[in-house]
Image 1 (spheres, one colour):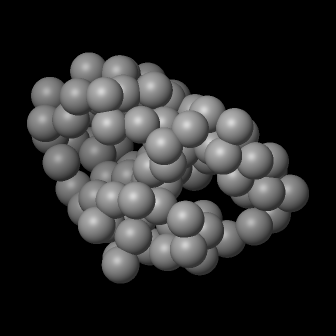
Image 2 (tube, helix red, strand yellow):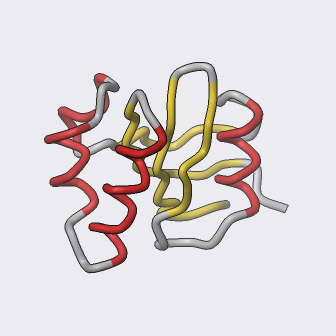
Length: 93
């Protein structure tokens, strides 16, 4: 069972914006480019990179998707108290 992971994310305020960005990603848009343009998280400077983190470091809804969802495929939208996330899990260890 994985205890660490690395992921990119895009954080936006509303679900319709998240769904629009997800549709763009599914058509081949670059995840990091969309993060830089649209994310409200400071991680947007790094293309949405959250680096490596441990299971339990993120809020539960986010953590659940990262540690159980598919790798390298845009996932979401995932609602948390911060807004709506699109997540791309790079790896799990």
